[in-house]
Image 1 (cartoon, rainbow, N blue to C red):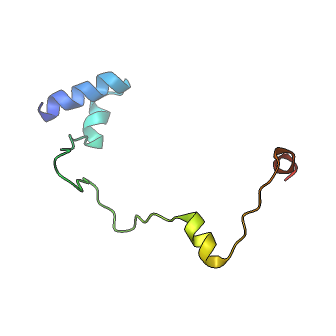
Image 2 (cartoon, one colour; image 1 turned 90 degrees about the vertical axis):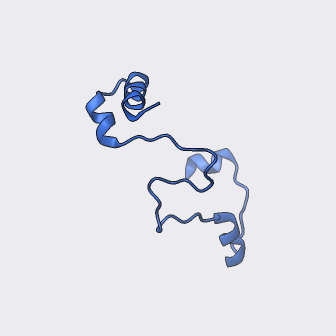
Image 3 (spheres, one colour; image 1 turned 180 degrees about the horizontal axis):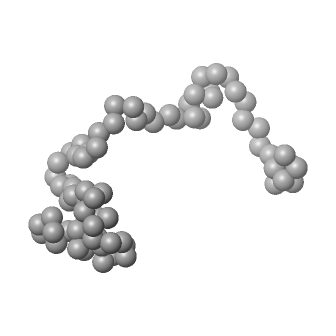
Length: 71
C-alpha cells in the first residue's frame, strides 16, 4: 500500500476530506519494528498514581456512592 492508497482508505473510513488526511500525515506502523513512534516525545512520562500515593503514605479510603454524590 502506498501513501496515496493509505490516505484514501483513511478518508473513506473516517469520512474526512482527503486533503485533511494528507495534511495530518498518516503512516503505516511496522509491528516488527519495536519502539516505532513517528512522533517521539521526550516529555511523555507515565505516572503510576497508586505507587506515588503509597510512597507518600496517602491512605485510600473506600467511599460509598452516596458520599460521592454529596461531594
